Picture 1 (spheres, rainbow, N blue to C red):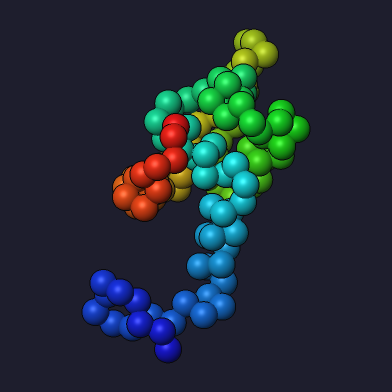
Picture 2: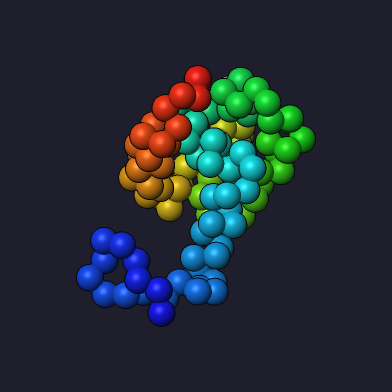
Length: 116
């Protein structure tokens, strides 16, 4: 069993399917940035997300948004009276806010020389 720093009881994460699933979708290229953009900006149209993540191709962005929607993290809202489509985080996605904050804090500490 592995000891997890900061927890009173040792937790065995070895091959835990839920842990693997979480890191699988958070670690997939662009997913973390998409989630971070939606956490910071709220409801956005596709083009607005694409502008925030310019290195991600439109094809990959569409793919990632669909996957995040299937995972219950992002919701795609179509408006009946127009062609407007918006993306936002579900409650499940919004609950990633403290995790993303900690990742920002950690990266600022350990990668201070990387320019924005």
